[in-house]
Length: 118
Image (cartoon, rainbow, N blue to C red; front, side):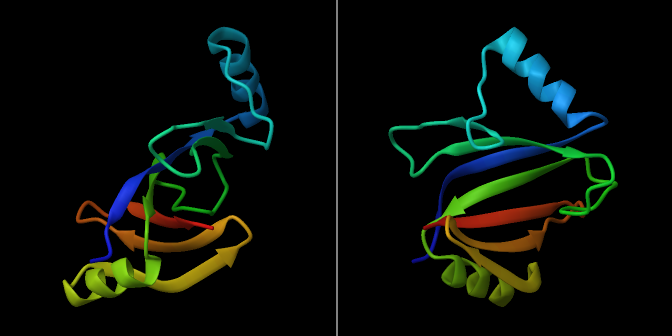
């Protein structure tokens, strides 16, 4: 059965993402070689991402301060199951070199991203 396989990332809004990245680098020692903080996790593939977004970025609803990204092993299977269960699912799906993405909305109105790593 298609299932969630792990935690994919955290996405936060920031008034000045560049300055906040610098603060996390300076004070917590995080580095961002590919534009976002990445934490290798031996039991999970390929990584967990911590990424910052400007307040007016529309990747997820501006009123929503953070978005969960959950890794899945079969995006289409999970999305089809969620639709069958009556979950509000965005019909859009996206594919990139690093994986496939789909979105749903939880009962509180939060947009949640599902990611099937490449």
